[in-house]
Length: 252
Image (cartoon, rainbow, N blue to C red; front, side, top):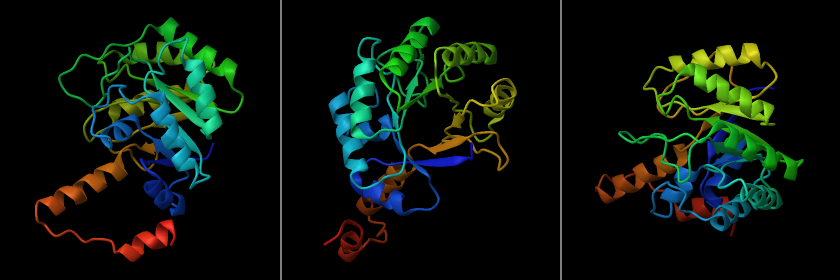
């Protein structure tokens, strides 16, 4: 699998910009930015209907692959419904994380992150895969976020792959250096060379040479937008796009 880059989008406008970019091959619909754009915290408050509406908005303006950050995926009973609805809306990938509902954002400091039981999460993957032939389901490992061992991360990865996961994402909030992410990736690729592996380098920087198949810039566009708005309100006179710029993107 050729290395691909996905960029976070949170609106039709941001999706239009990403669609025109040659830097990114796919679009990431982040639960953090989907929540933040509504002014609420990232703890699974946003409903599945609202998540699907954003997918439709994005799919309306772009044919690039869409990967949805589906948090914990809800309950085992509800997840197949989520998968079917996302499939109808045009999603290509769903990523679910192995934390207990309701999740707490992985980048928060000073919070205890509770991991879901391995068997329960594996069953969630199984029922999701049984309902669809078109969507790839990725399992997001939160072991390093929860300060568990590398060994546990591998136990979980193995279980999720056996349950039918199409890919794995290893998450970390290690600052600047990404030693634990690279350690996991190198061992993982030796054990599972044909399973796609994803990374989200939000707090760390990946070396140019790395074994990841998918690299997700998970919140960059919202953070760029937020900084521009903060600068405006702080009187820093940021450069503004013209109204004509808007017309040129969305049409007249």
